[in-house]
Image (cartoon, helix red, strand yellow):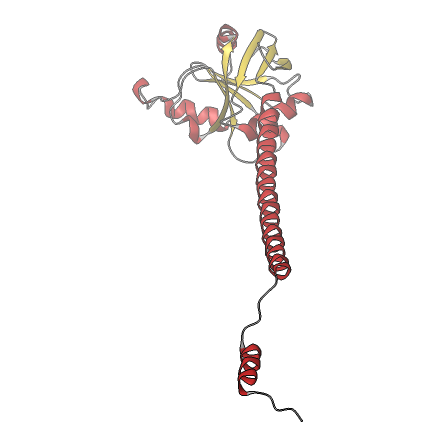
Length: 232
């Protein structure tokens, strides 16, 4: 058996213990894997960021759409009402912004013909004229009694305002009050939802009719019908 020289054994030992070199193909393979992982992560980030942005934009567009619908509904509501009375026409501007619920109810009643043929059953000179089915004295008589104790400086509200009594009421209880002078503490009794912009002379003519001791006109004066308009 041939003997192996010590020098040859040493060289073989170094070859076994020495680190093995990576081939170029292996390096390229690992680099390709890293590149694919990086591309996948980047693509995932772009996808989710785009999706989040689209959801935000859709939410904003829906919110804007809802606001636009609300605004359009408000703008579609009639802004004026023409009370055609036996003395002439009274044009009312409706306060859609400050009293939306009352204006909605008023418009609904107008469309149902609720005020057609309604009489002005109470007239108090220099205070209010009242039309409706409610025959009780209520607010108008109370104003007349208290008004004697107030001076003009304490009267905060203007004449020719349209209102209805406060509190929940059925359709028969929806009376119309038109002030003919400033009234003290108007908000305690009425919800103001409009103002006369034309036909003040008609209101004053109704105000001047003769009444009995209960402020009921001796000659019947009524509302023939109510016409709703977008513009006047």
